[in-house]
Image 1 (cartoon, rainbow, N blue to C red):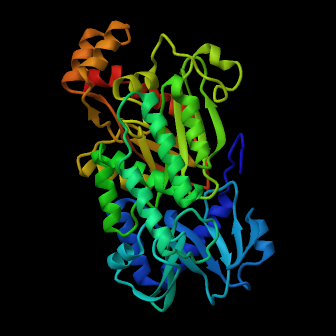
Image 2 (cartoon, rainbow, N blue to C red):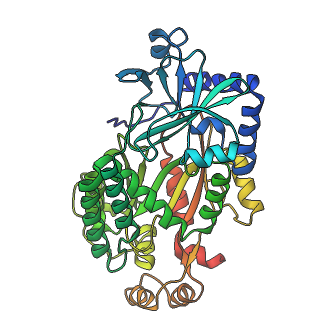
Image 3 (cartoon, rainbow, N blue to C red):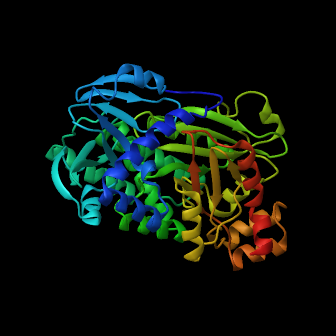
Length: 448
């Protein structure tokens, strides 16, 4: 578990990995063609979906690993080097002749069909914790891997009994009742999560839970569904997902964090943007799966004292951006679904693809040397007359806004386009405050 106050920029480490990719592309024209196609087709940089590199011992030694800021771990399939503070691939020192990238994908069959590359080997059972296929491209070996809640690169095995339990777990997720009050939806999510853990284990339960969450989110966000289909056509699925964002009412926030902790997440860093912004967030990360969560909630001045994630937050008379969103649509764990999924791209190309496809972008809310972020315009969701009436009666919205929300809808979810440089893992607190204000439903509907 890595809890830090400030994430570092690691330009030398990131540059070293960029050089490995450049060398491969120079020496493997067909691999280079695929990388160019992936970028042109979906806006995804090939480097952002490298799960790890395989290196022979003579080419990756302890001195190099330490110089890159990495730590070594002995596994059954070789020594694995990991950087705890930077977004860079792992390195597996193993019995290979030359450096070999292992691309992270969601389906080996989909990737193979898309590339048309010759399969020359593989390891791990289909749908196991770790499986990979090896391809021969221009005389060089390239791998693709599906990793599902396992940190090492050892081939996974799946028994017939486990497959049955996995199928049952997926059915539970597909049928999860998200309706009712926020409290009821959260309680149901807790019950389902506990059943999943009993069926398939905690780490795989987390992996499956958020795959289902992405599916539900795409059913309510056309921009995300369109982008996903582009990435499916390129054979990678959501292999580039960066983080999942959940909005919660104040009264359910503590229990939402408890739900995620039951699935194995730890509290990575906490944000509080100050009295003026009126919001807070807990970033959570799973130590085994790749899933990162950004959990948002309205905060008041009194919440400044102490840790707002450790106390039960009482209701507030004032609904700010997040509280209003939940009052209009329900909390993210319930019928609303995620507020946004953020994935890693080449920012300019992904934004161009979105614009040309009719999914306009909002202005970037972060534009830094190591991080750039922007939302697509929101998906508008119709608000029930009953929700609008309650908000009108308590003075949270005007009659004009209530009529607009029930007639044309209110800002719902977004897709977020992100690009990281220099291995930077953190987020931009100031930028998040700016975009929260810009997406307040009371303001968005003025120009919609």
